[in-house]
Image 1 (cartoon, helix red, strand yellow):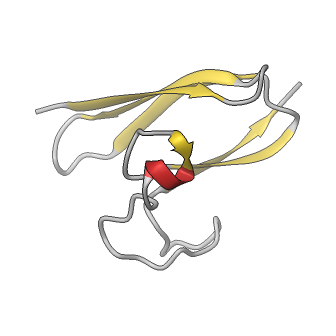
Image 2 (tube, helix red, strand yellow):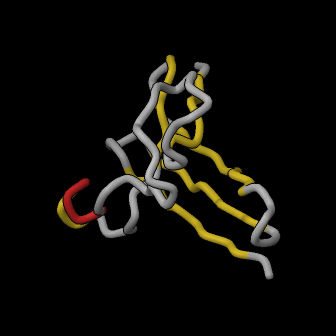
Image 3 (cartoon, helix red, strand yellow):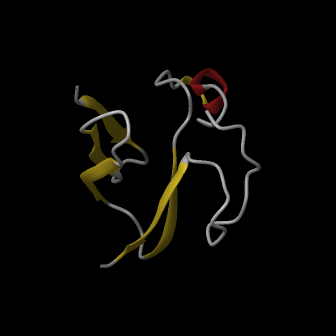
Length: 92
């Protein structure tokens, strides 16, 4: 059974986007696709919280998604939280 989720991003006045998460089955990887516009040039981190509620910023979004109880880790560490999905570079 396929599982899908969507995230609608509304950052600053100019930063917006939509990100899609799709997992074809329980033991399959999660595929992340989408488009984000309005980022300043440079490296940007991307992570996931447990809840989609952003009414009170990160407080209402809950803790970082961490189903395996891992330590935070650096972006280059192979053993790190699963919420730290990608680092992306914005080109102008």
